[in-house]
Length: 405
Figure 1 (cartoon, rainbow, N blue to C red):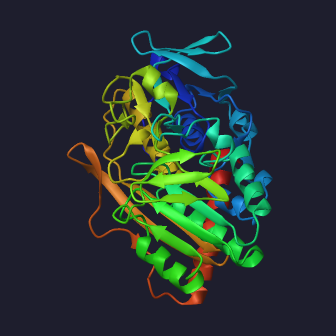
Figure 2 (figure 1 turned 180 degrees about the horizontal axis):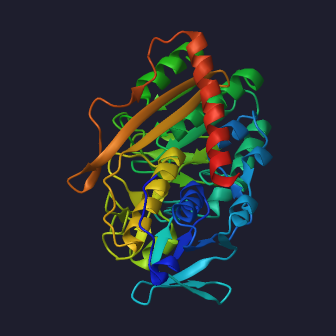
């Protein structure tokens, strides 16, 4: 913990507003309050309950109930943090004011944006919010997760599941491949004559060698991965016929899961912190926006260099950002951080794999610390895979308890 000099009266009453109640925002609000309990911290989140994306693939595969993904904000309120259940609709960076849909406005000295992702509905011909009711993306956990689960249950034995994976960057880089694995596990148990085709807009992906080795061992005739070079990039979809079109072929699905291109949540654009890519450039030491002063961006919305968009990363960035804001409000220079990310994926309920990295600021970006981190051994024995699956479960319990408990 960084020890800070006692603030002036003005600093003691500093107003910090955090927008977004996910792993980034909720973690940051708590870390800010703990860094200096005299700060006036407000967390703005329209939903009364947060539905976690990590382990939502297990819900799709029938391994978990969606209720296990739900977390509330009572513990955060009990610490003295104001939780405003409302939606931010405007940000005035010059006046340092956030406007809420309910009509009220919040003034701030520092604003933290943790808006997560938005779907780029205009990026894939044929795919929009209406289409998502037929070919779900399930990249926001909740109703879409359950819709995809119901479609898998209703699919006939011998049917075909088609998943399309987007180009980088997007939330949870290993997510499409864990999803393919767990859906394949379900199909192997319940619909053994089914087929899963994974159409990919990339030639490589996170933990690729580990996933492919597992697929060859467990699902050799079930999963077909089609890379970018082999015509895997989806150029259009048709909800009525449930077809995916690529440059080389058309794929007919009984169940179609479209994971579309993404960008930072809409409020980032409104606040003027998103650039032409749709994501938010930040200073890697403080996570302050490079486009708007006194606004910080953390989690999936930020351009975090080598650091991926994950719940673990969001939680780590939240803590670094909170300490940086505390230092700035006390007239101090934030220390240069080191951040850690670990990402677990399940191939079956008892087969886990992982990747870890350590990151630090280099030339204005977050870069890998050379020689740190790594992936699960490719030739690990079965008991090691079981252990990693249990580690994954323990990590989820720990991060949700820390963030919401």
